[in-house]
Image 1 (cartoon, helix red, strand yellow):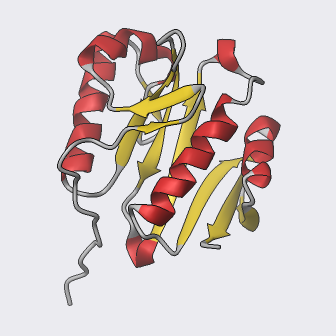
Image 2 (image 1 turned 90 degrees about the vertical axis):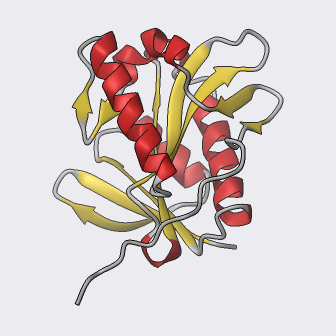
Image 3 (image 1 turned 30 degrees about the vertical axis):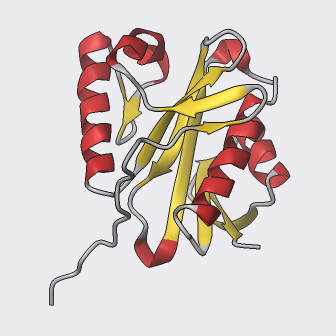
Length: 169
């Protein structure tokens, strides 16, 4: 028996999500220099621009295969890069998994709470997911706060990681 990994179709134009303070948009090569410090793929950090570019190419390939969607988070007023976020690891059983990372200079300003809210709305209304999950380290209290504020509940604790889930309302 061959297992088929459920995927979501790509969109005609890359989805842009926005509120009054932030915009979630497609990452461009011109953004990569600003993202090196927070670029990861499969848990491995980028060391330099070349790594960030290779990671972004893999992320684009994952998107084109319908397995993920990755956004740059920027300020509406200044255009400054704040972080990145997205849905990763496919959509098995109509469940999406979000991940996010914020540049340290923007911690504690509510940006990630807003980005998670935008991703939830997208997950429910555009991807038609039945649940969304996220995982964070037990000692990452700011991320735990973001997820609990967004209505996620603890699903399981595995080693040093807490897995959260939120079912569609």
